[in-house]
Figure 1: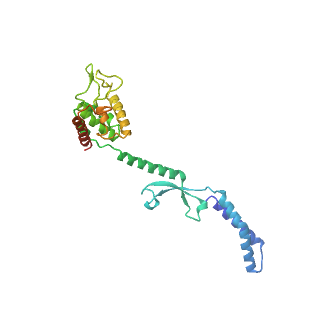
Figure 2: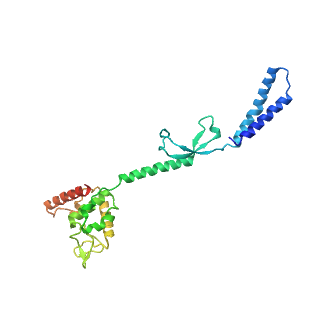
Figure 3: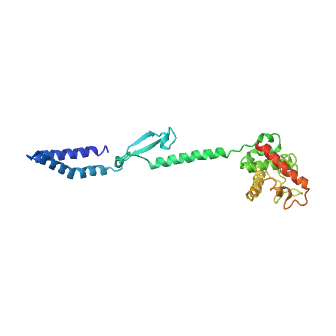
Length: 252
């Protein structure tokens, strides 16, 4: 309240001089009592007036927040001194600074979440195989889908060494996927690029996983289609076992 203090003191000083020059009582006690009454009557409204003249007066200061305040040690933020808060601590945090602190906390939480979502897949085992060129695209998928892409490709094409081709060009179909679009005579899809191949195959896998088909034994539809009745049970079981083994290698 620095801006209003001079006005306050000038007002009180004028009031005291006025009382001193005009009030001449012989009885000291009565004089003192009357002076106190007059000062109370005129002084308190004057003080109140001076205070509310600048109700938003504040000074921004730099403060270092300690651990007990709930903010990280060493973090600085702006605080506001409110003249109407002086009977208490006299300090309150600026709303915008609280928002910045909250955003900072959210940012830290997002960083931790990103750390928790990092994939720890053994891409080194793909070195030297055709599928190696697809690693950047495979790595864009979540860990479960990325691992299934690699495991199924190992079983179906030995990571691209035995895969469909058209006119001598690689179809980038390392998963034995059949379907609509550009296909070869046997019905296998022929993709235009590694990026397109990973995108379409991962989309197909994601839909199956969303339906709860998220383990090799539940993903037999990839091998057999609608039914495995016409497939050798030993081949079916070997497919499940091999996919499980590949998943372990990839995640080790």
